Length: 526
Image (cartoon, rainbow, N blue to C red; front, side):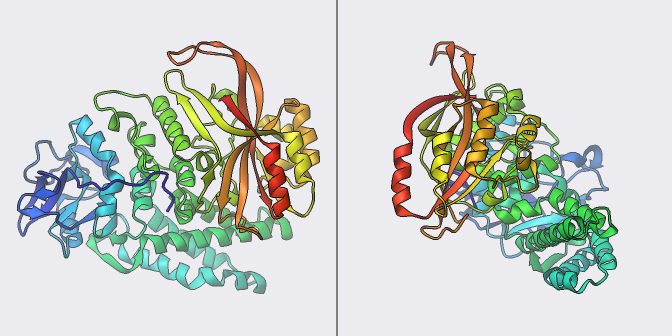
């Protein structure tokens, strides 16, 4: 899985001791002592409850905690169901970690501090579980059987032109039964799923499926999504039937699976997962960042600065800055779906509604050739690295067979007007670097440049070293930048993103020539 920073070892502030008769929350003393237990093995569970808290709900009884355990609507789960599941997942261990009994629900500083350690807490757990408390065994097994028996053979069904409609309808019904569980719409569970893809599945009634893990479920769903994409393309482009019943069912299935986050989880790429978080429900708007930051190994906002309050905009800036400082290549491989001019000096920052090009959707191992710096007082970003004029770069790319080049601009109305080919499915421009240069130069001026990000491995699987180069397309805009304790306000060029480009060099002599094209730079980013 792709994390930007290594997780530091950590023992939870509290663990829940599962006794024969009572549940007791035990606070840690020293580094790893919990009552009479030193470094106890513990299991962990991912579930959802925040949206279902209710003052009239039944009280869940847990000993030795100073806060009131939240009451939950009995329609979501009862106290007896909660206790039953706790005892099921405690098999083989004496302790478990569960947020409702192990995180102080009233002291916000303590709560955020422990949230900042979620990755380490999940990493250390012996066995992880996800609780689909609204999904019954019969429904779950029916879906798994359908996917296991049919997804791998769908290609041959397409070729044989068999009637898919009954099968697609059956899959749709079973998907609704399973993906309708609130676990699949919670923002917090998205992060937890990324942290422990090996989690076992607990269903309504406390039944633990012995054969299906979260990763296998995700794999089945991602496979279905891929096959439906193929079917939709067949109906739309090959058969010219974009409104056929098959196409409608394929679109419906793809929509359900995409909203579940399964295709993104299957990529094990945190950047894509951040985009997937836009489909999830956050009880608190700030959880849009707090509920996903551990995917990137980051501790932000109140978790990093106890006692201080932050707005969502401030947290998003911290998230973007942290991602770019940790891995600028990883953090820049996206294109905006809105005009970056709408985000004052923030075109460099990823947002929920960006697009991740298919070429970079897999797990990546980047080697950075640049650094990003941030003046957090005035939200100003700068790029330290190398740059090259886009005209020179495009002439270099035109040297023929030695390159595989892809360019993608932000999906804005402006770019749709000037570069319509870039807005087609797939989003990559393959009409020739010279033609692309002329189009963009006419619209954005002659100073368009490529800011070199670095190398990506395991994407193009090139004929030489299995890597490609990545860069940001940007152009300068003259602006008055604000003053801060680190810099004085002045008129200067602020470089705004246009898009990204990827290229593979398969000739060693051209690799050496490429080095001569780039010059050192230090640029203010817009």
